[in-house]
Amino acid sequence: MFVHQNTADAVKSYFIDRLNQKFSDREIITFFKESLKKRLKLSEADLFLQKDIRVSESDLLFFRSIVKRLQNQEPFQYIIGETFFYDLTIRCDVRALIPRPETEELVDWVMNTLNSKNQNVIVDMCTGTGCIALALKSKLTNSKVFATDFSQEALALAKKNAMLLNLGVDFIEENALLNDSENFEINSLDTIVSNPPYIPMKDKSQMEKNVLDFEPHMALFVSDENPLIFYRAITEKANSLLKPSGYLFFEIHEEYGVQTKELVESLGFDEVELKLDLQGKHRMLRAKKK
Image (cartoon, rainbow, N blue to C red; front, side, top):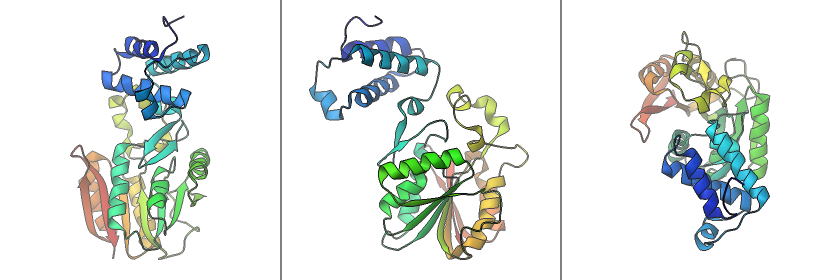
């Protein structure tokens, strides 16, 4: 056997020994604890209180599989099948991008802008796992929330998340690049929010293997010649679908903040504002329809 005894401490040592060349100590301990909690259905309190946790032979094989997949640089969120996003447990797999912390910051900005008591009509375009739409619905309970995506596979995952979380979001298959939406009436929406594909192909060489080899490229990349293609298309939709003074929110590429702002302004929006994320990068934009 690859560990000397069937205990959680032995598994922890195995994680550290096999992963310390690729990950920090903090990351490894997180992987170990989350794997243990997932497999043995333990809480954080259980981990603290139970000092001598025993594991079965089957459990050991499960933990060894996780270590091997981490060594192959597969994202831990895909291995474990879920991630935590804005107080919600979101199922995730290769059908959609893994929700990121900066996207939580975008959701927070939307929350702080809208009045939670109002019956807002909100659309999340390019929804992926559905994390933005579901987070908004979980807090803005009076609002009607829709989510669109071109990928049928991503929509199936997002619908599964909505069902598991018991949140009433309506999902629609729609291509964000086509300005022919028949799903919403003119001047009917209060807010549109989107985290669309925005990474130019030229950036591929700088990206980590765990992103390039596992996350869906259609949700990541745009052409070098037209990196703002989704922002133009969605802003044009927003011009038609938003009510006067309705809000448009984007997650954006940190290097294209000024260009995205100028684009949104050129398409007729007021009060266009860039916002820094916690890393000090321009990663969010908010605008208001005239």
